Structure formats: C-alpha cells, structure tokens
Length: 251
Image (cartoon, rainbow, N blue to C red):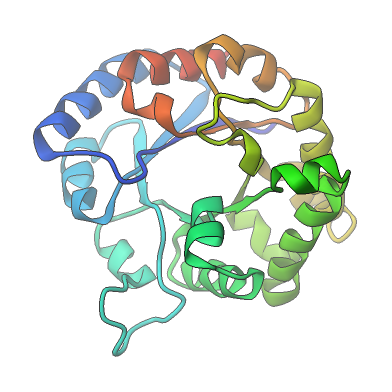
C-alpha cells in the first residue's frame, strides 16, 4: 500500500524568525502522526535552517527548483549536488509557476528531473493543465505529454525514485479546486501511463494533488484511490492548516 505524503511548498515566503516558529509548530503536531510522510520545500536561503531544525525528526525537507547542470558558469543557479550538501530529500521539478513564468519547457523539466536523480535527490515532478486546456477537454492529453517527456528522457524505472504532483494550473492560488472526481481522473490516467510501461513502478508511484488543498477538502481528495497526498501551497504557511491536512492523510 502506498504511503501518503504531504509536502509543503513555501514558494517565495519566509524569514528566519517566522520560519523557526512555523517549523517548530509543524513538528509539534507531526510527531503525533503515524503512517504518513511529511516534507517542506523551502526557498534556497533557508535550506540550512530547515536542515538544522528538522534533522532527526519525522519531517523531511527539500528545495523548490534546481539547475539541469551539475556545475559550471551558471551564475545564480543551484545544482543538485549543492542540494545534497543540505541533505535535501526532495526537489520540486517543473512547478507550474516555473513553466508559465520562467518558460521552462518539457525538455528542460526532464533534464532537471534527470539531474536530481543523478544526485540522489527525489524529484517531485509537477504536471498540470491550464484553464483553457481543461475547458477544451485536453487535460489528460496535456499531462500525458508532460509525463512522456520525462519518461523518454530517463525511462520508467526512474519513477521508482520519484514523486509526481498533479497541479491543475487553474486551481493554484485561485481558491478554485478540482473536484475529487476531476482530480482522480487525471491521477488515474497518470498511473495508467506509467503502468503501461511497468506495472510495479506505476502501482508504487506516489501521485500528489496540488491545487488549493485546504483542511476543508483534504479528506475527500485524499480518499480517492489514486491520490496519495498533497503538494500544499498557501496552507503550508499556516501550521494549524498544514497539520489539519496532514491529519486528513492518516484517516
């Protein structure tokens, strides 16, 4: 049976003092939970703080992006081996904001996925469709193409060491949420796509939902057979909300 995972994406939020309180508050609640995994993906400057506070606790940590390059003259970039130095377990790859705002292509996302794997950091591959694509009825096809770019680059076996997060772009930070049935449809399609290449890998793959998960909808979403937890944005910045979502994952 797949373990549920709830991962917080802090995006570009945080200060040292407020981070400390947030991490401590999350830890105080998470330590009472069993049977699920918890992680926080923090901005690069706060990886050392996360490492210091979370080492030896049930909460894992990770980054929100990485370079596709191992090293070199790439000013401002951060490599997977640098993330290794901070004991990052996870790194987000291809988040919708990276794709939409910074123009990351499917090819670039696949290269970043490969770079993370090569360094032993678990990539959390983010896939999802825009509102126009949803209304055109092409959600499954769009997500399949995003998945296929990575499958073609690294092969299906690589997904045994990865996580996928389905994040409908139209439901991120908008207050809109895909219904549990809409989310389940895409999650099932993602799993079927991987299963077509390797059933064992597909059945073991954690697929998170990442579109405005809140305490009020987490139980219903996490109750779907192919939804294995959530990638949490705004609610991850409020310890009480994040912990409520975590509790929903153990029901």
